[in-house]
Image (tube, rainbow, N blue to C red; front, side, top):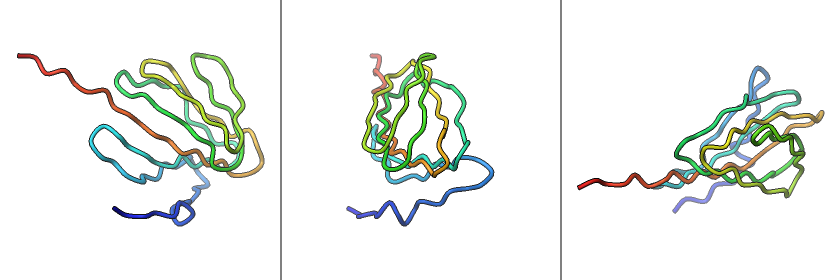
Length: 110
C-alpha cells in the first residue's frame, strides 16, 4: 500500500485541464481532475463506468444530462454509466476534483 499526498501531484497546466492518476486496482480507479480558471472537459459519456466526483478545492460546474450543477469544495456527486457529463471551471481559482471510476464487470458467457 502506498500513501499519496495529493498536493504533491497537483500540477495545473495552462493550456488544458489535466488528469493525474492516483491508483488503479481491478474495476476501481481514482485520479484528480485539475482545472485552471476557464478550463473545461466537453460533455461525454461512458457505457461501462460509474463515476463519483468529490470537490477537493475550488468551484465549478458539472453538466449531467444537460443539467448544470454548481459544485464547490466538499460537494460530491454521482454520475452513473450511460449519462452524459462535462466540467467547466467557472471561477477565477483552480478547481480540483477527485474522480473515482468503477468499471462494470464484464459478464462471462459459457
